[in-house]
Length: 582
Picture: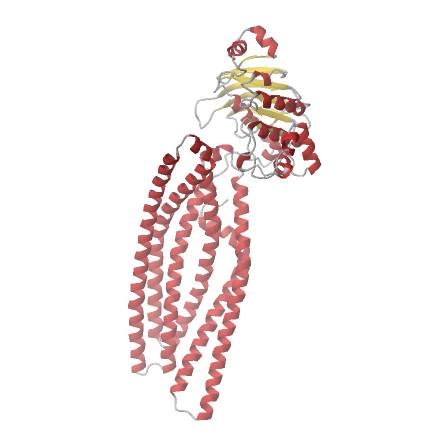
């Protein structure tokens, strides 16, 4: 994705350059026809003042009125044609921007989303898609205004060179003001946009965590945080608005001075008989319209620089290069069974101290491996690396003796099903959430997966059964119910690699019983990696790995590790209710 606003805008508009040229031609022709109508109206006034015969008087008057009316109607028709095609173009460009930015943002690694607030990313989305539309509207309007101005200056110069020169001076003054104030406004707009994004991010974050705010009775604390951000936003926007008022004042003052001078010059030329009454009236009406046209162009330039400032701010967040990218030679991973191998792997977060160093582990196809260890031992890091949410610093991770970097990330993820501790569900129906494991699955296949996950009974008791919406993050369901939905989703996915990330650590005994039965069904013929603090989940594992400080210190079956009376046995004895100490 392009890094600067101008390049970003051009990357879209260049694909419609002929349509945009057509729209500009239609709008410009409309303005020129309207200008022609003004000329014949001026001619009519001159005719009215002339001493002609009665018959010729009405004949010429009707001809002038007819020509003027024809030009006005034709100009209006061309303007409607331009607006029609513009109305078709704008929604199309907007949808393309949203699609492409969505695609690009989803290429980022997990670390990008951890570092950015959801509300901020969403706000930047809106700034880009609204910005490109607003910029287009201002720019194509300015283009046909500029063309209209050039032609009008040419006409006035033909009438009298002094009129043309005066108009050139006026337009140059307005353009110079536009660029001078525009640069300052862009800087102010960028600051305002930054604070606006922070405020929106704070609001979204508070709404997403409303339960915690309620439970800790911290509404006033959150309100104070928001007010502090709003104070900064208000300060930045006040400065921007003050600058806007200064711009308006300068433009108004320049307009008044210029119009006054033009009227004086025009009247003097008429007095000294350098121009006709038609030219006099036409010049006055033209200058009045052209002054507002120049004013409009000036204001459009100011708005475009403001929009560019906002879009550059958005691109600083959204157009970052993805940390993890597929190589040009990356292949699709297509497997039915999976063996996993860590070979001399070293890894650290943000160039800090290594979490893993010279780490080696082999998991056979179809083997079920449990991982135990204290917090910070590197358990969760292992499963993130298997999914390639992060790239290793040294060594490699292989699936079936092939480096996972040889495969596309999408195809790798399609072969891995993850059951996390905190299951995230979409605010959609139960049916849609389970079908997320295989978006092409039929309703019957979804129901079958739910039954295999022991989820069908509670689903059928819901108000609308499988068509019940679960609310944000599945709020209407209990933790155990969300876990069973996640297991049903994983069953439907049919991935050869299965990862449990402390999937039962927060469940009560009854829920755990249902989950364990579902897990047995799910684990058949899969390569399983399970992290758990609750040992009941790991007793069925073929092998248990005990980790400390990024190293394997013990491994074996549950019973063999107990007989060794080492770290695992010590942790087992320390249990009071089935949990390992964190």
